[in-house]
Length: 104
Image (tube, rainbow, N blue to C red; front, side, top):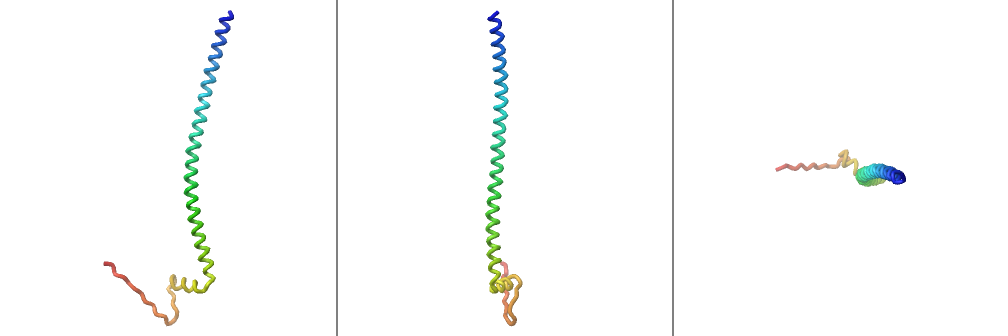
């Protein structure tokens, strides 16, 4: 009788060990998949961060150039240079020479 009772007890213990092992394995695989997904997501975010950081540096350089151009507009000689360059303005009586190049 005690032997039969011990046999049933061991069968139950083995059953619970088996169920616990299966649940532990499922939990391990789930945790592993979350970790792998997180790793790939981190790589995507890191790539996006690098691209946006480079773009930010370029835009910051462009902003510095524009700020320098705006600060130089306080000088009248810069206004004269811009009007000559972009609007082709000249003083009255000033001669303008245009040079044309022929392609061979």
